[in-house]
Each structure stands twice: as C-alpha cells, then as structure tokens.
Length: 84
Image 1 (tube, rainbow, N blue to C red):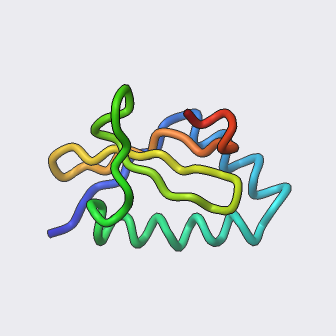
Image 2: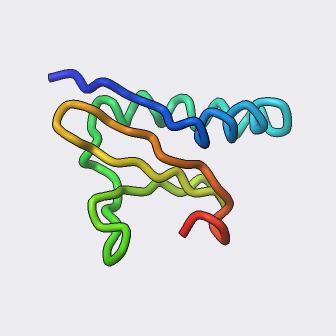
C-alpha cells in the first residue's frame, strides 16, 4: 500500500535554502517525509479554505501537504506566519 510522493517547486526551493541554513531541520523534515509516505492520514487535517490539506509543525515552520488517491503532494514549507 505505497504512496507516491510529489514535490511542488515552492517546496523544492524552500528545502534548497533550508539545506544551506539549517541542516538539522532539513534532516528532520526528510525523516518526516518518510513517515508521511507510510501514513499520510496521520497528521492534522486543515479546515475552512484549506480543507483537504494536512499540516506538520517543525518548530516555527509548517509543512503543508495533500493526499489524493495514492499520491502525496507536498505543497509548501513556510514560516508559520506565512504558511496560512
């Protein structure tokens, strides 16, 4: 029951910047991406305008993703103030 993971351009840019600035957080996010592929429905669902999306907090950063059929789409990684 495997899921395919897809990354948005915005997420890829954020990860590239993060890899240079904060390697510890970068590695935490990589590990959590593996968990998401195994159990995508585990994390908190969002409501209202962002219904259908899910989120994970990493300190002051928020990773937003969406599960569609067997595909997990990683949408963005932003500071909490900019994420919503």
